[in-house]
Amino acid sequence: MRLLSSVDYMFVRLETPNTPMHIGAVATFKLPEDAGPTYVRDLRDAIGTMEERPFPFNAVISPGLAGLAARWQDVRPDPSYHVRLSALPSPGGEAELGALVELLHSSPLDMSKPLWECHLIEGLSDNRFALYFKAHHGAVDGMGAMNLIKAWFSTEPNGTPLGFTSVHNTPEETGVTRALVKAVASRAASGIRTLPEVLGRIAKMSWGKNAMVPASLSTPRTLFNTKLTRHRRVSTQLLELDRLKSVAKATGTTVNDVLLASVSGALRRYLMEAGALPNNSLTVSIPVGFDRDETTLNAAAGFVAPIGTEIADPLERVKRISAATKRGKQDMLSMSSEAQQQFTLLGLVPLFASQKTGRLVTLPPLFNFTVSNVVLSPDPLYLGGAELELFVPASFLVDGYGLNLTLVGYNGKVALGYIGCRDVIPHLQRLGPFTSEAFAELEKAAGLG
Image 1: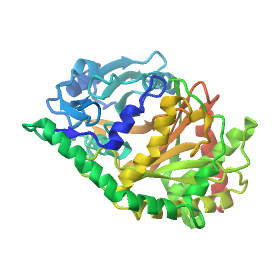
Image 2: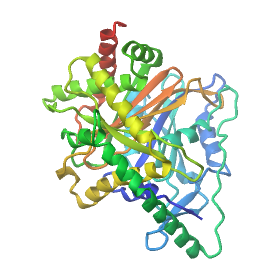
Image 3: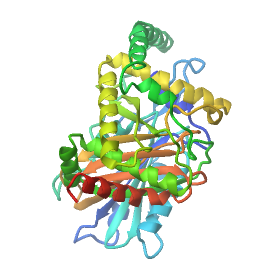
Image 4: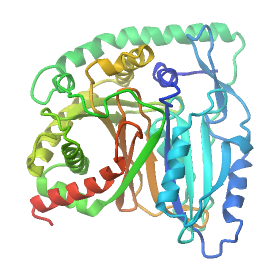
């Protein structure tokens, strides 16, 4: 018997028809030189016939006692449902792949089944194929998904693919009701015990230079902080890690700060061209991962930081971002893991309440969008003999927050995956190239052009 944590269940309850709460990624691969015509189909069959799957991809959610103790219940997934094969129309380029991924990412998962899907996609140009995977945020967060995906790959061209370690549920106990009551009581006690720490930390976040609470309360409304439809659009871009590191060194900041400054420059340009750039800086929610064990599915707490979109000078902008992110990380990492979980839950409560009541879009936003950063591998990875060429993430949206960005480091590059509401953000695909151009502007300002 394994309960969903309060944070896991909150992500489940945030699900609505217009805001499916899954996260996903699309990966492209180079076919091996000796690949036959059925290579992708054979790979689909190999994934579908695996006997063991890691928790919680072998389980469904049982609501428990009146919805107060939701838990995972073991099932045997139907491979023909969860593992699909698709083909792109000619010419099988990035536009055709992007259109299919946008369609797949716009469709919600069936909440009565294990909360994941895997789509193998053939017909990609230049002797390539693609894989799109999505899973519910209640079942896995970005870091957990990355750890799972890493286990699929090998660092050797002829390595064995899909070698994940299976994590099994704790066997069902006799007297399940009693066990559930005990577990719920234990979590309630933990929440009460850590509440003074959380409230004390929030109070400290309200004062001093680069404090999070004032930044959050000064967040302006933008054109993407409104009510959403379920339709999604993606925009991607690649940046070279060595160039990012050089700019970080030259400016005395971090690679993440340089990335945020490039994103800020892109949003500044995009909103200026739309005649909708606010006078106040846009703010972003930045998740920070914390220690997890095998029972923890969501292990990240976010802080809010301004990104200097009102600042024209790229060097001044990256310095401001650096000061804000340094303070925010210190505030997050100073909490105990139990307090971090409670802080995350407190941050989700207003989103949940407002989304369910329809009031979110009438209240001031707490931040403008979310930016997450994870690392896949510094070295090339292989799925059997197929080399992983590109890995681009796609996250989730909620009402009032129609833009999300996830960054993934892989093999000397950082892939940017913008995801936005198709009906709210016109010409979203411009954000990728705009980010690259904003980075080049910062690089030149740092004397490294």
